[in-house]
Each structure stands twice: as structure tokens, then as C-alpha cells.
Length: 117
Image 1 (cartoon, rainbow, N blue to C red):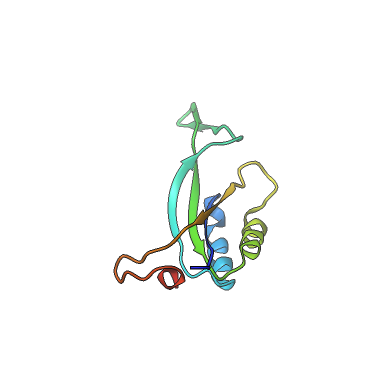
Image 2: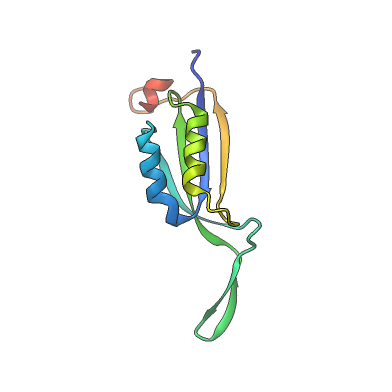
């Protein structure tokens, strides 16, 4: 088992999702898991007015995209994510990168790259 497997978690603005998804598919990323999440970093939320009352939203809506890559170069994937998600403003998000030991497809028992392709 000499292949390397890498998991990326991308937390970004919901408005960037469709463009990000299309760009990842275009460079060869074959699957992804997507979740709607809430979070706060340096933004610390925002203040809004609802029915005349001011309130502070501490957690802002974000999208989390999880992908596992084996054959697509990591640098290419990271560069693509940065190009799509970067606006230069606070709240653009984060990319978390993890090394994986193995992958197992539960249905068939396939392991390694066969389990993600």
C-alpha cells in the first residue's frame, strides 16, 4: 500500500459552493460530502435588525465540503480551492488537510484508491 490518501475539509461561504463544486469536479475530484454548518472565527458574528430589534448572530452560516484525494495532486486541489473561495475579506474560510492511512468501502470491502474511485 504505497499510495497516499489525503482528506481535505473546506469551510467557506455558502455562496461559493456551486463554483467550488464545479471546479473540483473539473480537476478530477470524484466525490465529496457537503454539510451546512455554523461557525465563527475572526468575524465574531454580525449584528442585524429583525422587526425593529437589534440582535447579534454569534455563529454564521458556512458550508463544509469534505473530499478525499489519491490521484489528483494536493497542490492543484488547494490552489483551485483558494482561487475560488478567496475574496480577500474576513470569512473566506479555512482548508484543513489530513493524511489518511487507508479507505474502506463498506459495501464491497474494497480498500485504498479502489474505495474512492
